[in-house]
Amino acid sequence: MGESLTIRQIGNSSGVVFPKELLDRLGLERGDQLFVSYTPDGIHLSPYDAEFAQQMELARKIMKRDRAILRELAK
Image 1 (tube, one colour):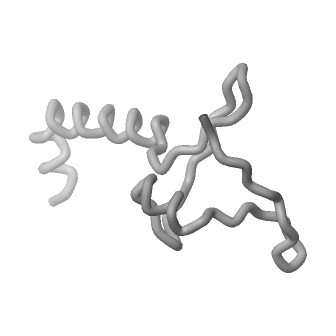
Image 2 (cartoon, one colour; image 1 turned 180 degrees about the horizontal axis):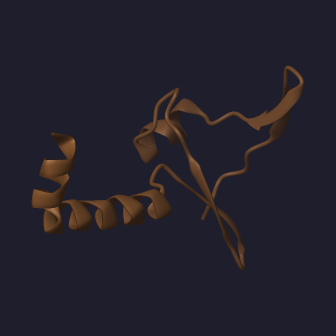
């Protein structure tokens, strides 16, 4: 089950206006970012950037493993 949204002209661009009820249901508000993932069935919009989260997890592991080296470099 889904909802139909219309692409509208917004200034010189085009955009989709999300009804307040939909934003509330998704836990989103004006100014939040949505990330687009391309799937075989179309696109997936999410407030979560999986690629960024994966990169941050890798960075945390490196920082934890190399804590002493990073501490020395910061001096």
